[in-house]
Length: 429
Image 1 (cartoon, rainbow, N blue to C red):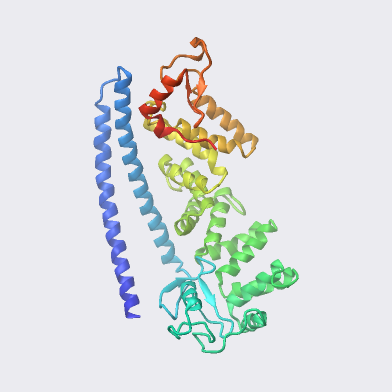
Image 2: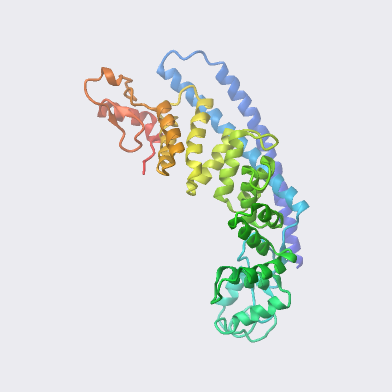
């Protein structure tokens, strides 16, 4: 226990040191950003392509520093949200009797393993070690014949396990009541579906503030479209640290389900969920919030919107595709004088995500994609020599990899590639 407390003190010291370093780096970046802006403002008007490329390179340096600065501020905001929430709502935890680590029970459903004999448990990591321990190793945590907690002979998992769980449920163990409720609700483990019986057990566990039971009740009422009944269960489970409940609650507040929209609370619960497991739906919600900059919610920031929308899109969240494409275009237009300079062009990325969005088949999204393609379309001229299509005797050829730029011939395509298109080009799937 002494070692555990010492480790906690050490971690707290590291967190404080990291905060100081982050604040110092943010101040340095702020000064560098202001200096870079002054430097760009002092540049004379561009008279040729070489000067234009030189200026865009300086703008790229500025954009990189602004992105680092914004994401540092965002990490501070996230830490503040998590810390403030846990001060108001201490997470549900238990101390593993083996390793003495404090385990968050609500954050990960399978973070704790229970024994059928005594109904007590240990953290999942210690359980894995114990289950794999040979007979001649440490008998204190071996699961060969007896429970490492109560020393009783371990019951056969395949015979009578349900009776043991039912016994613990009858004795008031919340985890067992939740399990019994779940198998009745879903018709698992040989049980027929019995919603009434399942709800009875889940309610018993919820009365003991069991996060998983609260979430299951919220999910049940949500499926039944009774969102006003689902929301209080999600609220309590989310405040206790249940990540899936935080995801659901964030979406409900953002879209005004079962009440008025509250973007500030949407940002709060989406931040909690994303900070715990990089949840894609929460990333989408945060991207939407930073894209619009609602009321009392976090201010508008295209950099932070891009950060979260990209996270959501890369994890297959289809709703994020078109929003990410639009955000990239707006961000580049805000940062650079031109979005077609090789090595600094967003056009391939914009079209990549826009075309993935079109694959969803949503008619509204397809209209947005067509508008984007009109805005960034490069079909009018060769990307290198700029010869217009109508003045070219042949037919312009499309880059087969990114399908974003056109060329009058191989020579122009090779020049454009070496000038920087090789950095921008994204293979279309």
